[in-house]
Length: 281
Image (cartoon, rainbow, N blue to C red; front, side, top):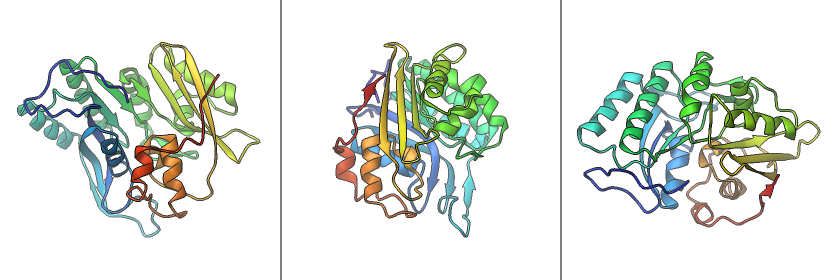
């Protein structure tokens, strides 16, 4: 993440060396997804993180016997943010990070929060992880897709979709590298005008052993690729950690099918080994 200077600070003066993040994502009591995956690595990297949990579940939804928990409504989100405003606490945020959002009212209130934060800090960086689904399956109501297209993407500074999410939002299939680059260019153009696009994982026909990450900066017109080996097994919460070198190191410590070993991996998250280097395209 970049390190902008806020135009005004809160009365608490609470801003770390690298920035002050408001993270609005899911939460689980046991395991690591959403805020449980994102907050700790960000803190290790020197960011102050305030977080709002869009849902609070006992465990992630992939467990065989299900889960229990609560979902925060749009009105409840608005109430929490109103409390921050009452105490002048929203002025120090340098970054807004959003992940899983399960309802239309919640997503609409995210837009309101973004706009209020921009009023306080025009340099705010909005990192949007458009958590819609994966492997051909939607996790959210279909009506949210249009809201992302029409109202969310054009507010984002950075988006980090996976392949399925990029295809869903663009309406275009990604079968090869040129398709991936075309979709990235689409997000850079009107009506979205997204400055930075990170396609977090793309799998191409004929290559089941590797995944490719693409990153593109609209201003510099530079694109990069990082090809990395697909690790065997199924893991949950990897998209929330956000750093390729870091997540590869975490996965190497995590037995397949189990929760991410974030605490055991704290040192490699702070100083990840460089196994893969970006190539400019």
